[in-house]
Length: 448
Image 1 (spheres, rainbow, N blue to C red):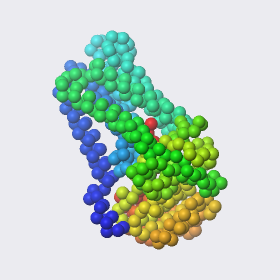
Image 2 (image 1 turned 30 degrees about the horizontal axis):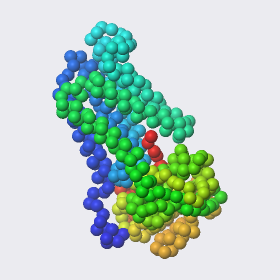
Image 3 (image 1 turned 60 degrees about the horizontal axis):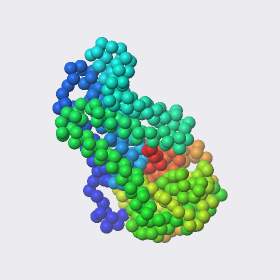
Image 4 (image 1 turned 90 degrees about the vertical axis):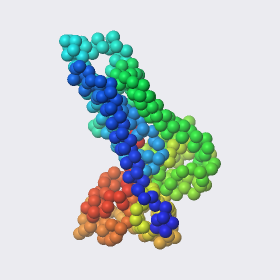
C-alpha cells in the first residue's frame, strides 16, 4: 500500500464505526422507549403492562427494520448488504416474537380484568376498539412473512414469490402504526412521547423512500445508462458493457454490485444482482454473468442501445476495508468478477487463487494474467475436483492455503465464490488464525 493510502486510512475501521453507530443508535432508542413506557404509567394488571412494553419494543423493531432495508449508502458500503440482510432477518423474528407477546399478554390481561375468555375478549376488542382489527391483520401478515422466511419455505419458493410476499411487510407496518396512533398509551401520554414516535416512524419511512426510490431514480436520470456491447466470454458466460453520462461522478468502486434492469419488453421487471467485472473508469461499466437461469442467459440477446436502470452501487467488498499492505484474492467460478475488478484497484502485492473445475472454466483469465503482469501480481488457477487433493488435504484447506501463500497472516483476504467454497475458505482462514479484520467476504443477499 502506498504512503498516501496509509495516510488516508481512517483511524477507526469503517465497519467498526458503522456497527458502533448503529448499535449506539439502537441502544439509545431502547432506553428512550423504556423511559416513555415508565412515564406513561403501569396498568393495574401486570399482564397488560408487559403486553404494552412488548408492543413498544415491537414498534421500535419495526422502525429499525425499515432502516435496515432502506439501502442507505453509508451503512451499505461499510457493513455490506449481506450482513444488513442477516440483521434484517433476525430483526424480523424479533418483531414476530415481540408482537406475539404483545397480543398474548394484552389478551390475557384484559380477559382477566373482564372475567371473560381470551377469544371472547379479543372478538369484543376487535368490534369495539379502534385499531384492534388493523393490528390483528398486521400480525397475521407478519406471521405469513415469517413463515415464508423459514428455511424450509425459503428453499421451496422462487425469489420473485418470496420477494412479493415480503412486500406485504410494508402494509403490516402501516397498519401497526395506525394501531399505535389509535390506542398506544405511550403515544398519547405526553407531547414528548408523541414527538418521539412521529420522529422515529417518519425518519424510518423517509429513509426507505430516499434509499429505495429517490436515490435510484435520481442516479438513473443523471447517468442514463445504455448497453454499448455484449461480448461472449465463454459458451455460458457473457459480458455486458454500458456507458452513460457523468459516470466519473457515480460513487461505484471495484468489488461492488448493482441490481440491473434492462428495459426491454420481456426484461424490464426483472432485477438481477451482478458485480462489476472491471473497476469503474469514469467512462464505462461492465458486468459479467454466467447463464445460471433464464434472466442471466437472456443477456446474450441484449441489443446495443438498450436502456439500463441500475440500482446501486451496493456492497462492502471493496478496498476501503483493506488493513494490510498486501492482499490475497480467492475466487471460485463466476465469483471471479468482483475479484478481477479488485485486482485493478487494490494496493500492494497481490496473489490471486482462482478455483475452477477445468482450465476451460477460467473465464477472464487472459485479463487476469495481463493485469498480473502489469502490476507484478501472481495468479494461480486451481483445477480439479472438490475432494481432497494430495497429502496436504483439500485444495483450499488450511495446509494447502498456507503452502501456496506462506505470508497469508500478513495479507488482507478477499473471498468470493459459491457458498460451499466460500465457507470452506473462511473455515481454513479461521484455522490458520488469520485476523478476522483482514478477512472480507460478501454474498449476494437482498432484503425485500
